[in-house]
Amino acid sequence: MTKIQAGTWVEIEEVILKPEQRAPSLPEDTRKVPYLLRVSGFLVEDAELGAVVRIRTIIGRELQGILKTVNPGYSHSFGTVVPELLTIGTEAEE
Image (cartoon, rainbow, N blue to C red):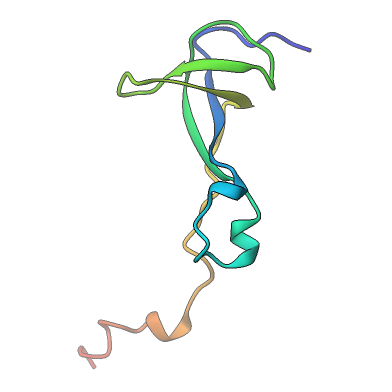
C-alpha cells in the first residue's frame, strides 16, 4: 500500500456505539448497525489506508480513528426539487 504523508487532508471513522449498545427504542434496521463518527482533518503521522491514526482538525482537536479517505469531498445534497416550493414568495407579487 501507499503511505499517505503527514499533513494530508483525510477522513477517519470511529465506532461510537456498537449495535448492542444502541437504544432499544430505535427502529430495528437502525439498531442493527454501529453508530459511526466520521471526521476530516490533517494526518498527524505518515500512515496507510485502514490504519488507526491521529488527525488534527481545523479547530485543533486531535482525534483517533481508522483512516478511510484521502482528500474527502462532499456528497450531501438537499434532495430533489419540490415543485410546490418553487413559487413560494413569488405568488404575492402576482
